[in-house]
Length: 269
Image 1 (tube, rainbow, N blue to C red):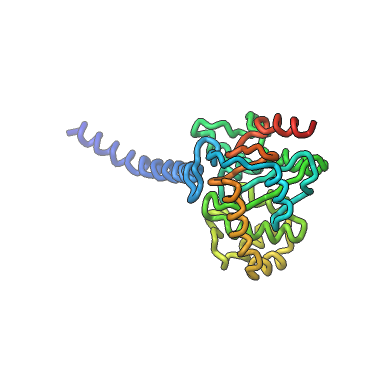
Image 2 (cartoon, rainbow, N blue to C red):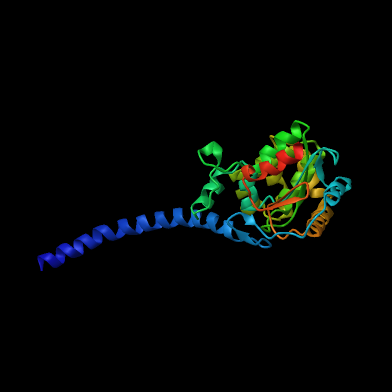
């Protein structure tokens, strides 16, 4: 009888503690699972270890050069030796990894056996977008950014980038949206809800005047650009994000810049 009472007492003591522990573990693992799961799923993206890896049809250098005559976000012109084209979505996790400002998402990808730990965090992955920007800033390369819905929640984020570009603040807004906080904002708070323009404007206020940003978003002036960008991406054979061109050479996925660099160096010769 005493053993039975003792066993019952232990159960009464441990059960509440175990429940609390289980709730805590469920919350932590659930949050991490949700982020990791988002790396595996996208509304229009065929995701693998690097995101979009479907190889597009052959695209000529002339086709890439002609993009600089289109109504797109662009830096530089078609006359430079290296022409970068990035097709991306602010809500796409692999785009965040490639963007270089979201080591948290990169770490979530690494739990799946991928190798996305940033060099800045002691890993081997060198995000390509910041390296491309360095060459653009140095006048050695030109760059185009085209929207493609690789994850499904990026419309307001992309329109914010159009608005920021209008003010000459594309990169500042881009770098904020590509942080982990930006990922949460785009995928959880704002998504594609046009009534959340103030939340987007407030988030980007250090980069772009929030009054201008809200007015620009509310105007709907860039709604049609979402569609024209998508059509342009499709014409280039794109089926997922992120997707890069270096001249006519395609890199479909969140490649490390170390994999892209030999192609860049060859073009610069």
